[in-house]
Image 1 (tube, rainbow, N blue to C red):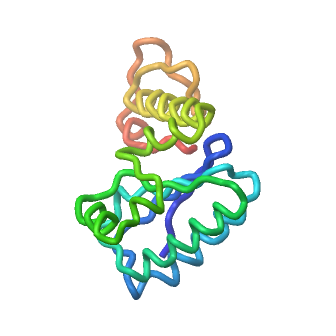
Image 2 (cartoon, one colour):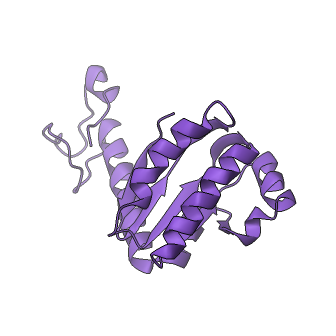
Image 3 (cartoon, rainbow, N blue to C red):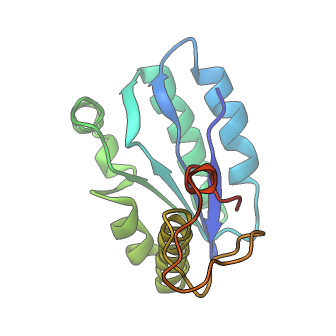
Length: 165
């Protein structure tokens, strides 16, 4: 199991996907451990928006993560729980172990205002870059391609290209 992680200020967020069950728990732990060892991170948010199920073995990995983060006075939270995962958290009383937020943005706002500003800036930059691909002239898109003149549309082969980040 591999999942992307990203830092915003001093907060790291990770976005696992699929099922965190017996077959995926060891891989989940291996990917999560380096994020826990980052001494510069004041918080870790696990975004469960793409997780459809978590078993007791997955909850054990999260319990270990919570203990490690608390041992170094850092925060850990869960965000955007799917209904089944939210029910599992409630039944197992895991919502008392983890801070639980309805969205990644809410979790970032609670953990660090600086992280929220960085997250919002990232979203704005991505929106500008997506507008560039569709032919609109943004001022701050980090694209290697020259910007078109105002009002000029990109040729179709460029309009479908992804802007590298």
